[in-house]
Image 1 (cartoon, helix red, strand yellow):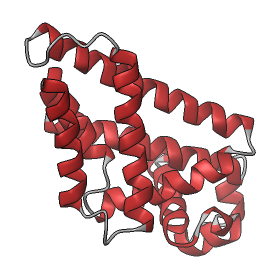
Image 2 (cartoon, rainbow, N blue to C red):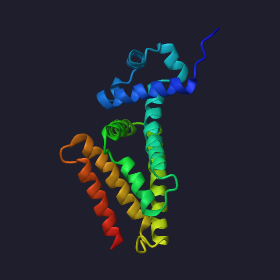
Image 3 (tube, one colour):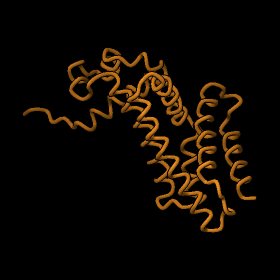
Image 4 (cartoon, rainbow, N blue to C red):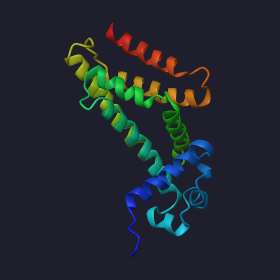
Length: 196
């Protein structure tokens, strides 16, 4: 009887292997040969699931974005206002080894996106989705009386998103100066300023 293959599981295994390679060795390490070594799959199997290296790298970046959002939803299934914003921020900041690995993947992806319209468009889409969610949470916080009226909500959302992605870079490159405690304190200081 032929072996039944779960395509989604196999794709996820290939993406997970690519994520490990990107986080530890950089995007240049993501070759079909190296992924085959890590997963034990042949090059033919890899090509069946992904058209090439770029498709795997894009799937890795999309995967870390999706994982961040899934963790935030799991922490608060009905996010609203400052509580919802808090959960999203806590999942974006690299506060543990898993989120630090995701930050390393994001940083490597950003480097590639500088020279690729496709990757730049994927990055812009991801950032726009986070920006919209941050704006929505800020407006909910205003409506619920958690925050005073915030007239420049889009600018505040941009500032917060820049801070959160900046913390990804700092935690990856300067971990001693960007401990989880300092990251959380920086976020809390930002929110405290909004509450005044």
